[in-house]
Image: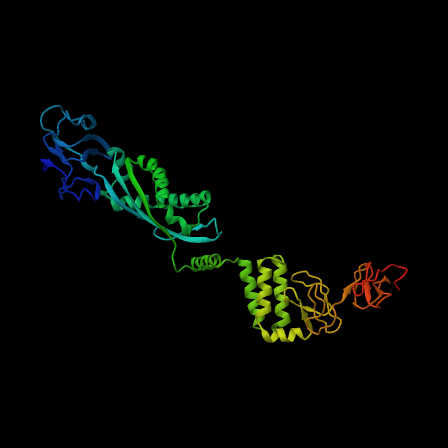
Length: 414
């Protein structure tokens, strides 16, 4: 039996390997004796294993194995006290250096529902974390098992499922609690990283690992995903509308008006579209005014056809049908000329189109009558009187003739 005289670490780079079982590349790697020299470097610990059980632990230093410094193993295999006694045992070295660049990431996108927009999006995330082995015995028993070594890659593979589950739960809860969309999360990576570190620290401690830090470097979605493309286009459209100062309802209205304008004979149809849309959001509001303005100016040809069967309000310029009593845009009562049918402005003495006298209103019943009528044809009220001196018409409530100054009274007027 070839007894090993010196046992020391000659495995992979200590920055890459967390644990390594001593091997001298022969079948006698576990052939030890009570005179074997054990060398443990700084930031390392060595543990003797026998039949899968962990026994004596050594910190940094040089040791000659004896029944004095391996009491646990000595009792287990019943080594004789004193002298040189060969025995079999495995030697595990654990590197306790800080490893701050352990990579992690989602191998494929995970589906998360965006609480702001209600759509399911494929989400990817990646980052890195730093660890240090705090309890060598616990680490070897719970994680390493029958492996020959345990590296950063093993750490990432072992905790991959745990990380994906926790990052999915944390991101979902964070979005719901903070009312953030997935596309906004990269602005809050520090806060998310802190919460992830707090979540994972007690989990890793259970395996003898101290979590030094945890970083989420990115939370993103695939740019070529159809749902992502549709969402980004919608957000870009909303941003454009915000900049230009109109809403989605107004955009729909503009689209309807544009479609109506492209149809043949678009005059009356376009006007009705504008009226309907204006009423839908409140006539007199910004959209009603915009729709009326667009309706009035979109097609000169359509307006010419329209004015053949309608007139224009003298107050706001909106066309109206000949049988209309009020302007549908500004609400003003139509004062129609009895000669040409045009609307006469308020307080005008005659029609600006044909020069005919402006119609008067009966003070009793409110009907429109000609200015030269002496009696209202609707209620019979006397409207005008004749001056007995000069024969001119005077108002019914006048006390003096405006032409000659004659005093007017009921007995003298006829």
